[in-house]
Length: 262
Image (cartoon, rainbow, N blue to C red; front, side, top):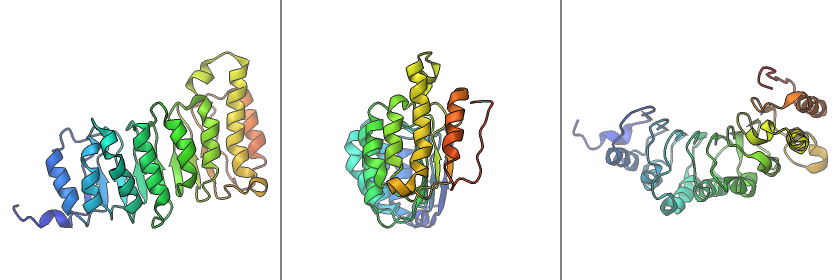
């Protein structure tokens, strides 16, 4: 087809797991296609620094943006402002996924600040599983509190001792109903035989639940209904702490604990 108008009417573009995506062609489509509602580049290894400028022109109406398993690009620092502007201008985003796409700290910050400044979006799902590189936890601590998401996944980010600070930031998100902190977030701590490390794990998990249950005192999150902390190998003491905290959490109607991985 040689009709130059055709790309403008594409609504769903699924390229997930494609072995080869031509950069120039995709950038052209994204620049022109203002009708696009779903963009899925999952597991393509696509260099994301190539698309941000194009998304500012044609991608502001996108509802579902799947960029997991991609690549931040060779020069991610050069597109920081474009990333911030895109996420501050988008009007329909309901699902945003960067799962298993490692984001440099400056890119993570730009994305979160853009979302935090965007007053047009309704609460959305944000998947940041396996995205954190060094220094990203500090960005999460500083920027997450103003992001109005309904669901967030921070699985497999190996946060170690930084998790408590991140949890305190998450507690300020009053629209959040679902929180996933499962997977490999406490790898070094859970393997350590030191009692101090075991105590820190238990205190962290207890904080996760208590922060979201003591809303009358802290005036923090009152909407959270689901917390996922599977596969962190908490041990018996950790599970006892969780049970104690959950008993105070009147908003949580159902608790599911996978004893095979706990």
